[in-house]
Image 1 (spheres, rainbow, N blue to C red):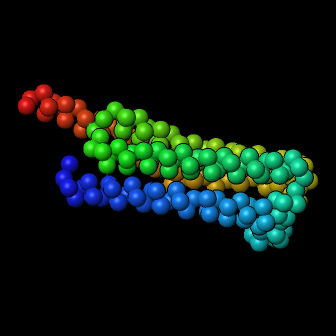
Image 2 (tube, rainbow, N blue to C red):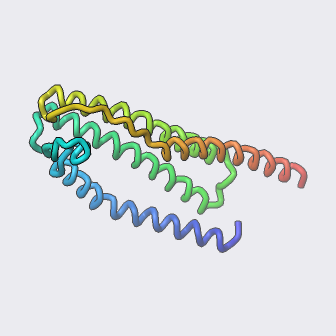
Image 3 (spheres, rainbow, N blue to C red):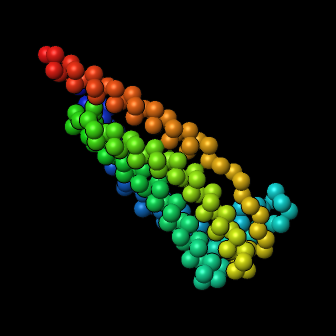
Length: 176
């Protein structure tokens, strides 16, 4: 690995550490907004006005909102952890190894899971909040996160390319 590449990976590692330092403040802001902003996503579009804040929900409703929040944060925290692990490995010169393939595979599955699980969980969550009386009406939410699915599929393709690069590197090492 060239010196300029090492410098780039060191800088990326520092940027990730900066993100970890900022994360508690962003998490606090997300928690605050989740509990104080209207939870109902169909505000002005359906004419039902603004919905109630999650802090005014029943105990069961608040638990549902908290579960949705933890799931959302958990997906993205897992992705950031995996990305940071990759950068730290790359910084140490460990690029074309099987651990890279495993990490990219996990990231791909997480991206696809975010899209599928979030739409299913969000609709179930809204329906249960409606049934508990915390929301005035229930309307299914059909927006699928196409970007997450596309990123997951792209990472599967990238994994195949890296697998071939590892095989080529092993051939070169055996030839020399």
